[in-house]
Length: 318
Image 1 (cartoon, rainbow, N blue to C red):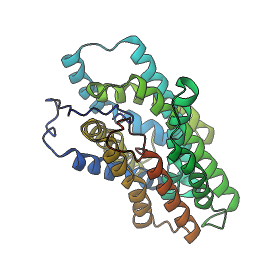
Image 2: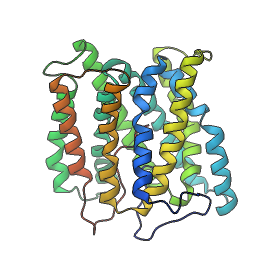
Image 3: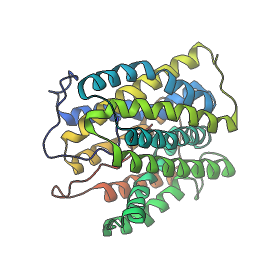
């Protein structure tokens, strides 16, 4: 998957994918469903961040490796500077994996997935700092609403959970969102629609190493978590790390920016729904309102006119 592919008006179709003839909107929707299960699957596994990060990456590598090999045979080698960027991005992705996994245990799968969407403000800020890119007015208007929503989702008006736990979990989700925003920014400068699987393969290796190390702050890797936990982790790896990311990464270049960004907003909404249905989370009314405010602010930031082509920066859940 690549989360910040530069969109092109002309569809990019790779014969190595049998889904090339499928409507890209359906592919993004399928990818959104797959990735929206991430938080619930991590919670169901019941393992610590280091263990979930390690297994979600390791179990995905064989399939991603085969896909990357196909790309290598078709397009040749990858420039060293691009590989370096993919490794750097993957390191930040690993930080995101670990912090986000911990926040799931503290504030819940649904709320953490919504809060982590603050990455949409990180990418424009980095573009402004490093390239003096113009900051859209809608971005400035949306930021206060975004953080107000984060505060509500974090239980500032009361939530389902301990106050200190809610605060720490929200803080970790925010930090994860920053790390993910850096990942998007780095990969967006070096990524290619033709190299989606290769990029995910390299980034996943780096993410596994760094994420496991960061996750060890809350416990070392358990190489024998038990069959039930291993089953949930395998489902996580195949649904989100492979299926979701590859489908979305393949489909986004074939869609207008505003269409892709809008469809991806279904992901945090579905994540909240799945957290209620699958792991029986019960957010407060204030937290629901905060999540709705975050989604609205993200839509405001990512929604663009058809003439303004740009990378999609709405979050794809890890």
